[in-house]
Image (cartoon, rainbow over all chains, first blue to last red; front, side, top):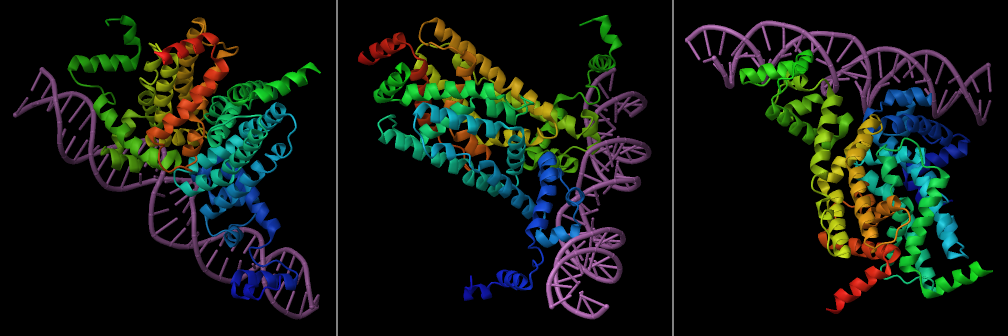
Length: 238
Length: 238
DNA sequence: AATAATTCGAACCACTCGGTTCGATTTCCC
DNA sequence: GGGAAATCGAACCGAGTGGTTCGAATTATT
């Protein structure tokens, strides 16, 4: 916004200039960019990084090869942009359930189900497989995906559990570890089976609820305080 | 052995004939086969299925291309043979700890540590990444890997838990699910971090012990009976 | 309608791919 | 040492690789 320092950065200068002209600068049209990424998604996700070819993407996106190379320097950069976008949509709003809780157990169940359903959905499993497969050659990609996806979610769980502990509902020595345990309990068996294609279809909602409710029960038996037990007792008798 | 039906099967016939001659039939020398697979391992594991080329394997194995095609019909079959072998070595003896138990908690800890250490070791993570990445194109591969690896181990855990329940040490409604929960608790966070390359190095033995001990504690708080508590109390006071 | 810029699409580069073939060479048994 | 058989190694196949270039076509603003 009128920042004189912007003039020193070439890209930003070009962008501003194009805005002045009422036209996007080369490689800056977000619609075209999205179109390319959409094509890239279809190809990368179902072929993997190596097997996917730029020509496939050209075909799928309905955009010429030259144009793609205006928007992305190379195949790897295009792939990274795609994964970054996927990560964003996957984890968006996933943790909202944790923001306001009333009933601890039900909040955990609700959150666990959202998490478990998302992580094991066909679409997300495909994306994760692609990332894991590519992590062999581009470790930073997997690392960044984890850091900005699952890791951030984990941090939110930690905060939530800490708050519950402060309210005297939980008693946890190692909250970091407990957060991981909770997540894993919600996924018990499901993630592993899905990622290895042992399950060909995503688990049903009923299956997920069964796993999550059991997981939450285990978790609360291990970390729940007498106060929590009393509250649940009171709630049940009403 | 002397089965006349064998003559109807060409391969077996050739094999018998070669044995009669004291020489392995073409594509039947186990040493050469192992040599090829060893080369294939190095290439496949660090490049993934797609990026690996048969020429790379030829080079790495020190075996001519023609010979490889005598032993394996194509790239995919070679890859499957490699994964099958990897699976065997990974899961071999992993579950021996469960065969004789005395002290429940310590048996679980010991087993959990073996499991967790194995699954998160650098070598095994690489192999799993390769399998997961290839599961996109060859779903049966991942499915078979899971079925004959993790699944079999899971079954052994189920048997173990059932036995402990019969002894009155555990009380479990859904043993299948509990077995998954136990496994996941032993890996809390570790597997996910390793497979996504967020951790670049395998967890230390101390880290693993911390995670496993905590996991076992959670598990036993959820499923342990009064009898178990009494036994542990008694053992501690001696 | 004139203008300016992006997008298209085809061609080009040197190289590699998986798979196959086949004669030369080496190996080992008798 | 003779002879049978496995192994080698190089060449060949058509297709495709990522990346780059550039004139033609399209687009939207003036």
